[in-house]
View 1 (cartoon, helix red, strand yellow):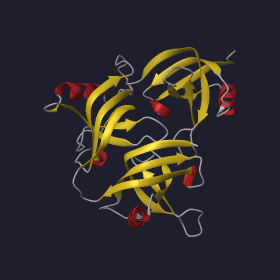
View 2: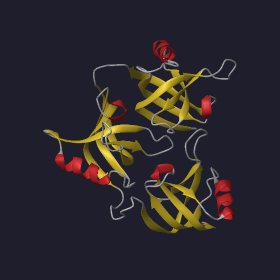
View 3: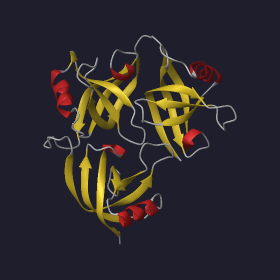
View 4: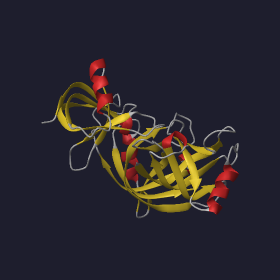
Length: 276
């Protein structure tokens, strides 16, 4: 089983047809971030979830807190146990600290109400509004760095606080007090490339219903993760066969950041060998 902490994730509750194995599920936002089964941690929260089911705008969406577990008997093999939710027009609520969340900054189209948002890395790329803050309010320095990272696909980690029920993208905002960039901003196309030379790790499958099938978890201190694929059919079949076996391999090829794959990056494998 895999577990994920859910902090202020935005989604809508939808019912399944009569006779289905499960009653309802959540469509996470933005569209494509994932669809998972849902239940309340107690009777009161379950009643709120039922009341949200199949709502139309206004009041369709809610922010959810709790724990998501995958590899369990529920819709798409995942179940969100909700410990708290917020919906409708409410006062802002600070949901707690943001400690090293990993993701990218994406820009909204010109003319949109909000400039950009933060996309969480991982199997469920949910999104939040984002802004830089210092001791005296909005920080020009952090704001400028976030603006520079926008649409580059370069990964970053952020620290600060998340506030839901605020006028920003996806009805929430990460108030960033510190950030660390995990790549470089030298690639004008927004795609950052680096060579992969015998990196050691395992191929791990994402839960059923996740946007991407698998990823490569490196054998390093932090267990760094990247999406993985190959243009060579035989290597692609090897990668599928390696999923969740725990078998260590070495891979060669190129890592591209800022592409649509798990953790907003992909290793294109051109050679693969067992790790001795």
